[in-house]
Amino acid sequence: MKAFNDLADFSSEEIAALLKLASRLDSAPEPAALRGKVLALLFLSPSLRTLASFQAAMTRLGGGAFVISPEMSIHGIETRPGIVMDGAAAEHIREAVPVIASYGDAIGIRAFAERKNLANDLAETEFKALTDLIDTPYINMESALNHPCQSLADWKTMNDLDIPAQGGKFVLSWAYHPKALPFAVPAATVHMAAMRGMDVTVLRPEGFALPDAVMEKAHAAAELSGGSVIETDDRVEAMEGAHVIYAKSWSSARHYGDRIADEKARSELYHWCVDDPWFDNARPDCRFMHCLPVRRGVVVSDKVLDGPRSVVIHEARNRMVVQMAILHQMMGAKA
Ligand code: CP
Image (cartoon, rainbow, N blue to C red; front, side, top):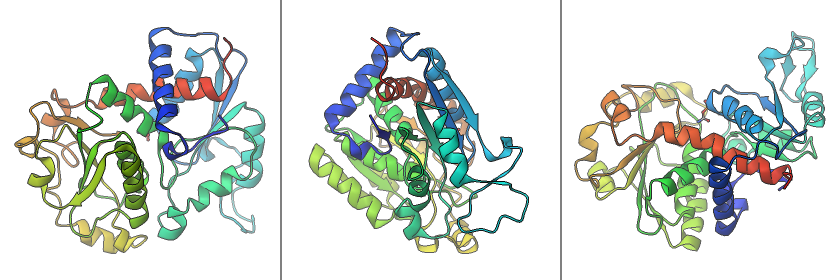
């Protein structure tokens, strides 16, 4: 495997094989599989789960990992292209990325969306500029429009819980958040659920439709898998018979890059906080999913998050488990 960048780059059989490997490595550990291998981890954006789970995954497979982020570099890392470097930073990302990659057998890169220009973020301009600098196998640890490791972990979580693929109803719901957040998780999630063959409803208020390119990709995946994708602003209709609600906030595509206009658009939407009444007409065993971190009392009530519907800790642990499988395949583990 040369890159783990997008679930869309894999067939459903390849995803099934990765998930099977993940379960095997979880139940039958291989503590020497990646002995002597090194994973480089470059974090240009913050993290808790991704930072910890990749290091834990490498350790469990007998390899090692090192982390670099701009705050850790005593030189300071400049990321802007074409800049005259007469400020604080003494090192440019164009040298830093290939140097870091050269120390590893694979590299994980996290670089969130710039959220200035929608076309650039939809085209993954910044992430591609980074991966174009290296020949080393790489893993997308969250870019402007994707979070494939999170999606693979979420797919596994639903398999673990016997949530049906064909005929399973998956609601991806916008939730209130004080900040305009990127499209990476919602874009990856709607595609993942459609690729899994589920009937997906994107529930969002007026003005917060996902970009056309994101929905078109999800529709194409559903066409292949036998699933479906619709969108609505009607919560009761969306939640009817739902197996899963996956909450996430995202920016208004209409006001992309305009913080003030986005804040105004969401200012009356505090009630988009997932709470018990949301489940009134869902299946009794409807699950609550979220990638974390999550703002309590803003995105979801304590009662739902701490209650039996919530599977957020299971999802987070599965990050480590599926990443073991990705690393095992990417680094050519010893038999
Ligand atoms: N879900 C996720 O990627 O978490 P972190 O941002 O903490 O890595």
